[in-house]
Image (cartoon, rainbow, N blue to C red; front, side, top):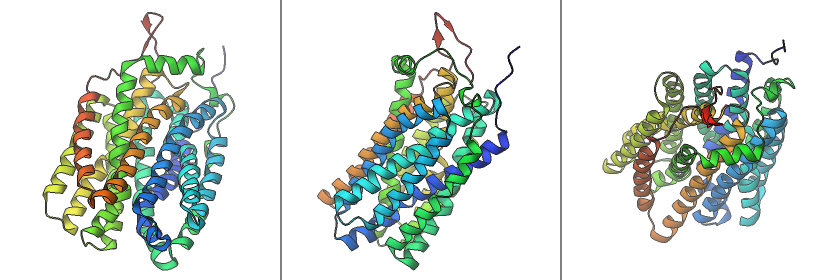
Length: 407
């Protein structure tokens, strides 16, 4: 009888994975706080900053596919270490780039590649391989909640660093914080056989072809596109939108912190519900609730209270799509190529992020308002709710019959 592959403990995977996501997602969540000080100091337009952050989101998506392939084949450790190095270099480049081109290469390409190697797809691959299927949705919810806590924790810290040190020195300090991911990555260093747990006789090309021929995979990608558009636009442009409405910078910082805080509860709740309810229905409810929340925010008189209520509502829904979407992918296709397939779905998310960030800056510079983009975000939310309903969550049929894959 063949011995089962050695595994990491659930506690170790969750603690190290959660802390990595806390740092990687927390740092990026505060980038919107740098828009105004950087553009004013460098005499750049908002579109210049927005384009760099849009490239970051696209770079994250593109590199995410390849980071997932490497993590599935060799384990997550090497990918995490490389991603951390890119993160620190990108943040330093973001601080000291004298031209828009260099700023785009550092804040855009380098940090995007860093996020591909230090966030959900890579960490979820370890969770998929090391945690039993019956606990997987819950574990993914825990990791997503950790990313949300990072947003709650890091946004006000970054705001304080900017206020006390100036934007350049603040970025240098954040670059040093990113390096903490390296020692945490040792906790996700899978045993050699453990990294290959869940292996099946299917090549990368076969796995990709199978996924892209499966209609539900395309529907998940389309829904994730909408998720990326909404989150990137709000995360990057809402702080400046609030300043345009004559609200203080503190309101913007607290708003981002509230999004992170309430998303802790939202993502964990969705992780638990995913153990009992149809995940496609959970996703549809999240997207529809986002559309309603944005509409009510625009209709209400702008005030610190309305901002905080909106931030709490959006926070509960912010990353709640992540555990449900990735759990569906694992349930349909298994875990052997989970990081890579999650990377493809996330690429769609990041294309949406690119458009949301860039379009926000472009339409503001050309019309003087963010109004059109807010309305697009509402319409896309309704669209995403509808297309997630027909998603099939059961294991894909291979060779004419369903295959009992984990998840």
